[in-house]
Image (tube, rainbow, N blue to C red; front, side, top):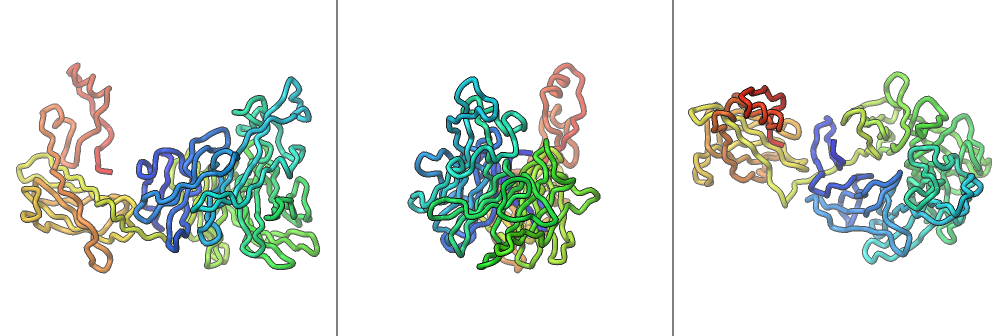
Length: 480
């Protein structure tokens, strides 16, 4: 499975495959955001490094065109994959970054010379001007002695010997901004701690942790190596946050299952309590050693992405799982998954159509149609023609949209096909271009085809054909 981004409908059908449309680099944190007063898509486009990314934040319109690129300002490095979200009504963006700095790591038994520390950085950047509104560097406020890991002990810890393998003691993976105080909530995976940062001087106002330094007594629950810390509500006495509790980093576990959590922090009593918790809806749950998120929904439910497991689950307000999907193989990882309303009828593209017939002697036509990213299509009208002009077309039939790609069969052969996308109210949306029906011509190719299509070519198959020993191909060619 290639590195996304993807959009699926509520039935689990693919709606948008962003690979090649929005670039071929890794996509992270793909979500709906508000920009210039309308819905857009925001995500991090990254080249993967050791546990972090180097890239940029992208804002995409409903035609899937990039309208804004956001980068880190000053000398803080590059945009990382862990965070990019618009705040202040889309006027500014929160961005994470990783920065390797020379550091005395003798406390970690690196004494042969000067070591390298990978610190967590975040900035708030003005989207229009690129001006840095605020920036924060973890090494100025959090000592490496607070970390839960040591160099060269996990797959992303780093050795500390050189900049490319700097010791990642902090691992920043989420930033949120308070709409009331303007302060920031920061999650540090490798310290299993959530920090509340003063927006004026960058000092730590409070920290929440079960295993490390904490300003609150964590009552009746624990969390570790968490992701996706978000501010839910605040007043003078109480702060409510959500997190995804990984409970594991793949080497150390604090629980047997990962879960989404809603946590209430009572400031006068200095206590934190678990308000709600969501587990994977299967026996034994799942232990996610990386990534993952907890999205609170407007109806009181939650939408959970299970990180390095390719699953997502929606829970209703009663805590019941009402939607659960595995959208890729078990080896596929998913940084965050979200549930949003999204509408698009791309104005810059048309439907894709492919037609196949085994011969042109009244053979059936098998027509395949799709429109990447279109959400408003309800039906397809199929027009056949003997020449690629609109004057010669005949409406041959219709079919309801069936998933990402709809297959329809005409009993009569036509040399050319055009397909029309139709909305639920009957409005014609867009026509495809004319596409010639493919007919296998040569004898050798015809031997690899049947009434529905042709087998895919392979170097092994071609060698066998040349040697006089044809093989049976095993994969069918269909339009994508």
